[in-house]
Image 1 (tube, rainbow, N blue to C red):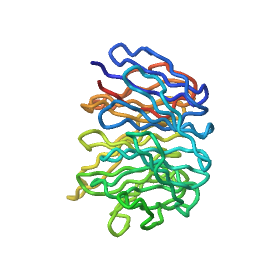
Image 2: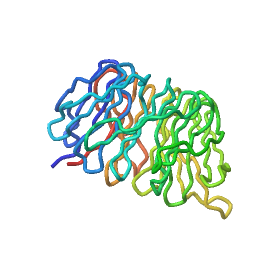
Image 3: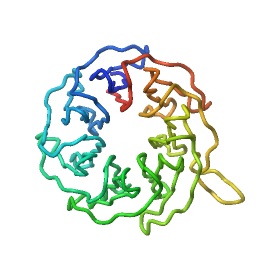
Length: 304
C-alpha cells in the first residue's frame, strides 16, 4: 500500500512516479511524445495518458507502472482531455480534429468516434450523474454537451474566451468554467446554461479541481504563477456564493492539479520550474516542492 503522484513530463516524454511517503521519484516511465493528460480507472489498476504530439493514447498498468499498450487512430490530432465513466468507458477529446473518441477500457479498443462540430475541443468533464459529458472548445468559446449514454452531441452553449478548465460541483449541481483569455470563472446552471456567478481570477486560469469535500475549487493561473482558491460555500450578504478567498503563490506556469484522498494536501505541477508545489489545504499555503521531470503538467493521485 502507498500513495503516489503520477506526473506527466511533457518535454521529456516521460512519467515520474512519486512516492508521497518520502516525496521521492521511484520510477521514470517512457511514454509517447508530449504526454499531456491522464485518467485513472476507478479501481486504480490502469492509467490512460494522452500523448498529444505523438497522436497516441498510452495505457499504463499501475501495478508495475509499465506501458502495456498504445492506442492510435488516423483521426487523432493532438489527443488531449480524457475522462472515464462509471461504466468504464473512456472519453477522449482530440483538439485539432475536434473529435470525441470512446474507448472500451476492458479491451482497450476504440469503439466510437464523432465530431463536436466546434473548434479545438479540448477537455472531458462528466456531469454529476454521469449522464452527460461537457467538452470546452477553446477555439470557439463555447462548451459542447454530449449524451454519455447515446454517445452523441446534444447541445452547445457559449461561455467566456478560451474555456479550458471545467468541473462539476455535485453538491450544488453547478458547472464551473475557467476562461483563459478572459481570466474569469463562470459558474453555470447546466440545465438552462445561465451564468449564475462570474468571478475575476488570475492570468490564464487553466484547470479547475475540487477538494474531496467540495469546499474549495483550486484553479491554477498559468501566467500569474499562482492558484486561485474558490470557497464554494462562502457567505456574503446573507447569500451562499462561490468566492475567491486567496491566491497561493506557486512555481512558474502552474497547471495540473490534484488532491490526496483526504483533502489534506493538494499538488500543483509547475511547468517551467520542473517541480510540484505541495499545498497544505488547512493553511492554504505551499509547504514544499518536489522536483520532477521537464515541463510537468498532467497529473493524478493514486492510492493503492
